[in-house]
Image 1 (cartoon, each protein chain N blue to C red):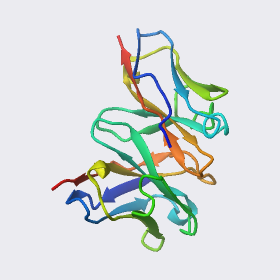
Image 2 (cartoon, each protein chain N blue to C red):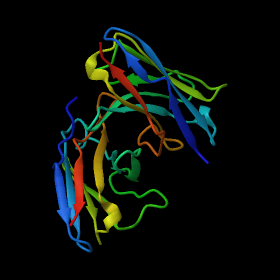
Image 3 (cartoon, rainbow over the protein chains, first blue to last red):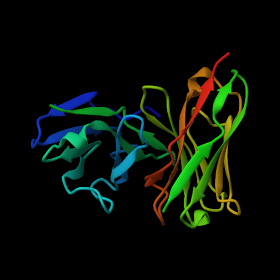
Length: 110
Length: 120
């Protein structure tokens, strides 16, 4: 199972919006509405930010939103803040009853 | 408070074995799917395995199938990962993670991880 494709890095200024893409296949991202997104700060465990493509767990800021079109899912962070600087990973359920993560995107707040 | 604490990592030679443990507290362990996810130094997350609440259903990534085995002891609130025939590419921090109630998908709580180094 190949990793989902994400851009290596995305940057933005405070207050701006950025979008991270996550491209898979019809056997994973395109086949199920089971895409989730995780934020990971250096040396820390990942944190669930979005599940089922566009749902936010309790306690996650509404500045984070998710969507999907075909085989590509997206995470948008609006009103970018310094604390959003981290690595972000998408994940999808697959047709093999397994899971696949994305390659990861480093978000830099300029 | 939900807590997951991994242990059992360390240095092991190629071809060797290791058993990781994940002690869970703060929730009804037997009611939740549990996962193992790993992360090689400086690299991305990779899903490894999952188990349903009673251990009767398990799945594995192709890269570990036949070498790793996930199990759980619900009386001890502990998840295990038995790793055999270890290779250099298995070197990583191994996290245990819980799926949300009623789901097997997503990982809503994570431990802090335990480092496994496979080297001669």
